Length: 318
Length: 184
Image 1 (tube, one colour):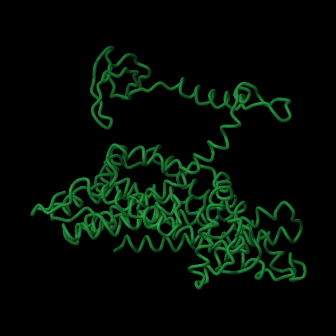
Image 2 (cartoon, helix red, strand yellow):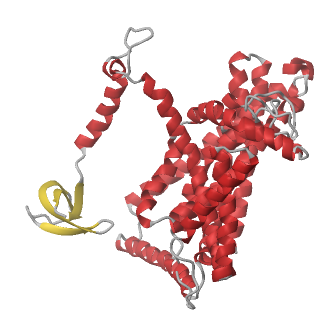
Image 3 (spheres, one colour):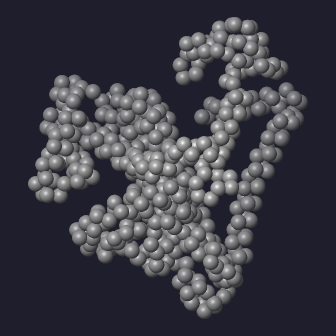
């Protein structure tokens, strides 16, 4: 890496020297283009935040009696924010270990001839539109999950998550979380797979040469090498799960409560799904309220990403 | 991978262990009177993990046993991840195939209410991708002066490939873009 950086600097100095110390036109154009692109993205982000703030302000200032459901803004948004985080957490908890296993299978365990085809199959999942996942969730996974959810209620009902009564339609938080997990799995595993297969050969062969079994080799070289990328892949998936709208809108049977009960028919909605459902029928302050909830989602996503960045940069220092 | 002291499970061990576990799981479930395909797969996987680990531990020792266990868990996780994909493909085919008919692929939806087909969408998709493919034959970019008609060169693209240069398409100050045909 360092060697690389040195050669490029030298090349740059050489080029600069050869053209009499002046930076070339191409260099100047390129750097101003990249600066412009970066500034545009920041400006867009700032514009979105500004728009959300301005539009959310009336809802913040309004008295509870004017808002939908005669409740304060916090009471309105809290269950939605809770549902959003809950669904996304279930999805990440299920998807990330599976995605790491899938990535390891494709990069280190599957027979060489199959690797391309298998990778392609998993990537196919990423290309499926979210509305199709929603339909699959409500027509296939939901009905199929009714039996297992009754079993969970009967055997593990003492845990708050499976308190029941189990839904008979399968339109529960657990099913929504599972569908979200299936949706984010390809992204997370694609990121992990890329990095796993880039683990330096000499480290892997060194471990094997010292007598490590394949799993010990993976544990000692591949996983530490890929750790920060797995984290950033997970955050990418978390971001998608937090913002996912259509699949959740279709699947979840909602009522505005806060509960950890994952298998009943009364579930907290998520911010994005709530906006999709209510926006067409809203006007005036109700719209401002929805936008205020959007602002909260924006903040949640921003904070998650900042935390992820912090984790990754700390990993890289070590 | 064989241990230096030669104590290793036979090559068929992973498959044998899984087949044995499946049979054992089927017996268990039939005895318990709650047989279903999904349950069979889950129980087989669990039994296979226990069986593989203890068999390998007895013959090959704890490190190899752990290696086999983790490999099995990873393979099972991969199979688990493929289930939604297969289910999705199956559902789309099941619900989509009845809608396929000669009318669906031969007529458009213009001015029709109920009925009609998607010929316009098919043609549009084919035209867009077709034109893009037709306009861009695969080419090679070479250093200037390399092109001679019928010259054969070797190219490294995920392995060595021999190509014959056929036609000069573009000439820049320091490169040539040429059409070619494959030889190997």
